[in-house]
Length: 19
Image (cartoon, rainbow, N blue to C red; front, side, top):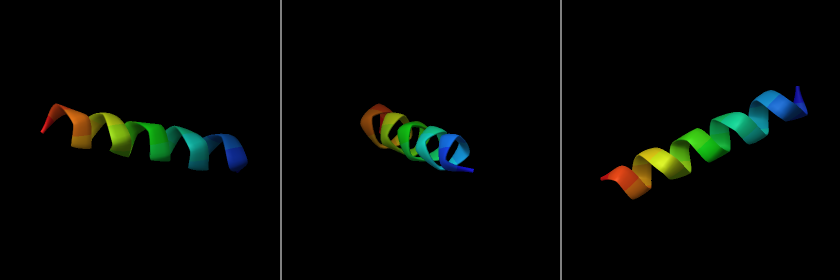
């Protein structure tokens, strides 16, 4: 659902920031 999509997006951003 929308919540999952947003969560996945935030997680991806965090990963990119970590790198």
